[in-house]
Image (cartoon, rainbow, N blue to C red; front, side):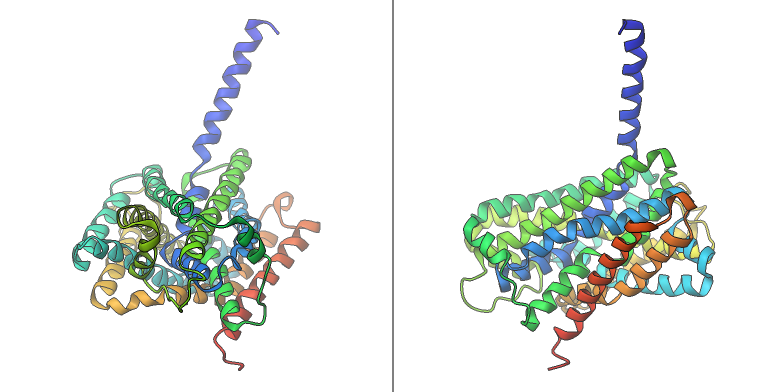
Length: 420
């Protein structure tokens, strides 16, 4: 090939590569937010209570998580609409408000766990709860109200990358590989506590606000059909990273606290930090654990608050884009600010709310029928014919969603001991 032909080809390759990089963001952000404070504590409690017996579930949830969030990519790119907007257009305003109602419940629960995590890290270092929560709220408001979507996205990714500190925690814990492999395939199916934590782990991975956020973010970012492939890679990478983080937390707690006797319960960030400190050392344990929790809590607070602001805006019909200034989209920014300030105030006033971490994930599991039902219905009826769910893949998505929902709901109900 001549130099004259190579140069245009090289320029085209560079252009395609830069365009692909520009598409990345919504999937990574939402997945980093998926590993929020409640999810981390749920993974930690799983390792404490059952060793590595819930590790295989973290692996199996990677393709399930990708499959579900990939539907939001399709819907966002090929309709250009947010999730609430599309439900309203396809099924009517009543169903849209029902969906947003579920989103509101999930968002409130998530914000309580995120803010409790921030407060917990502050208390580890002797910072008063009110001071750490106020500083977090100011930072969260500043991130969103002073920039475009792309700036918010970059800030969220930067915060979320602190979660990678949990890989250091897992490595320092020194897990025993043969024991890990043996316990990973030893499943105590008849144990109610196991089923309860299994359901909590499902709820910790599949959350209503993730669906709303990623679809609305893609619409706000104005991604087009030519971006579909790169957006799917973005989502796949995020699904893998978030489950690796969950697995790292589980491994760290299983290798240290798990199997050491006693019935340790991890309800708060302080509980987990105190339990890990004897094995990891005070300085190392506090530093990497604190960074991981702060990254998880802050990015998740941004994502779930924006998801609710987008969702309500799409259903109610007011302006709902980060490309608008606060003076142009008062309701949108007002709901976001209310979420952040309200969550911080609740945790500051009622500290005992931090013990709800695993319960919040159970609530997410119980919301699965609503979340996945709307998502699949939209993928069947709202997409252009060539992009709709159909044929064998439709069967696969439906079967996987039904099985996941049944396991989540059954584990949540049976695990409470209601049926003896």
